[in-house]
Image (cartoon, rainbow, N blue to C red):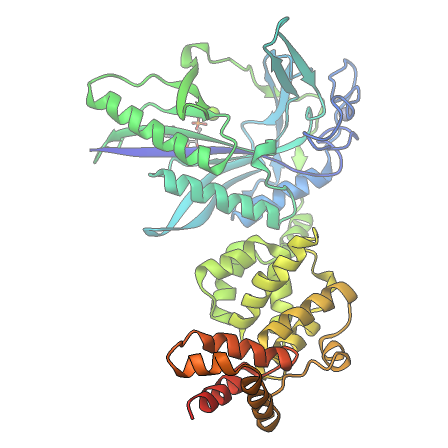
Length: 478
Ligand code: ADP
Ligand code: MG
Ligand code: ZN
């Protein structure tokens, strides 16, 4: 009956070494001591002058180019004037009428198929400081200016989303992109990437937009999806009962899983934007732009499609290799061996990942060169060592740094497939376990595993399990 219409504004910190307009370092919002990365420029002292950080522009251009935006050769910084304790200058430097980039697009793989979202604009600005409100008496607020002046890219879409799922997918796709481009860590909980959906609903078939409500402080994908779904339901119910939606900004209450009003349109500021007099127009010359374009890596969505095509992986498998970039790169290096990609995927995401996690060196693949993992997988695949042996060899490779073949040779681990030797071990084992042997023959089928284990032990764990199983079975059935 009602159709949701949603547009997104996303703020992404450009995690450069220094801030947007001064030499202060960009520090971690959680671990750094408050106000330890502040200077007169980002603290807004009168008489100081901002200077644009070229690296921040470059980072922003990487993102804008990846999103297929047109880059404006000249963009203009403006002052957005308002008073708040976290904005020491009394204004924020941002881009308003002439943004850095416009008219991009991004494709999403939704459960309903591929969907394209248009990017309206992407512009550069500076982040604000951070306030911490302490409610315990005497109630007060703490101001931390470490974040003030950190470069921020704001990406605004057209109102092209029609479900909470699409919104979530967009946010995830964008996060993967900025992590790939090396411009942002993607830590939503730390606020380095902030997503603000604008939501309206309208009668199905209507072409006009309904009144929108913007949700703030969503700090996880789950909160984003739930917040959007909540607003769609709330607004639809309002319209169904003949009420009108008020244009407002709402917050997301994670504990109660609902939105609450923060401010209505009537309180909206008049920011009195005007061009920033202390900064010249930002010029992006075409040679620099082409250099940045040429330096773009394979983008995550391109990589995912290639991995599926090239290695016959499923969408979920290739998504994992894309999400965990070092894992994906390592996988591809091992895959150069020509061994089965699925087998390699299983080893890399299974045994090797567990070893690294247990050692507290997640994503550090330097312990085992790719060709050595390939050598190990090849030994196991060719039946030279059995599966449990292969796992213990991998562990030894991991701890000692030795190669697979060297470990197998030194410890005499080569799998025992020789039928004569195995048959002798079977005969000995049955002679040593007459009661169990008799019980098995009398119908206690589960004793097979016990006897199998006994022979394997005699073989030092190295018996070829397939050959051993056949021999033991034949011997027990006479
Ligand atoms: P504001 O000036 O309030 O930030 P904008 O026109 O810049 O509003 O739009 C902000 C975001 O909201 C954009 O992503 C846009 O696509 C989206 N948007 C605008 N109007 C609507 C609407 N009626 N319903 C849903 N989304 C909307
Ligand atoms: Mg807005
Ligand atoms: Zn500073």
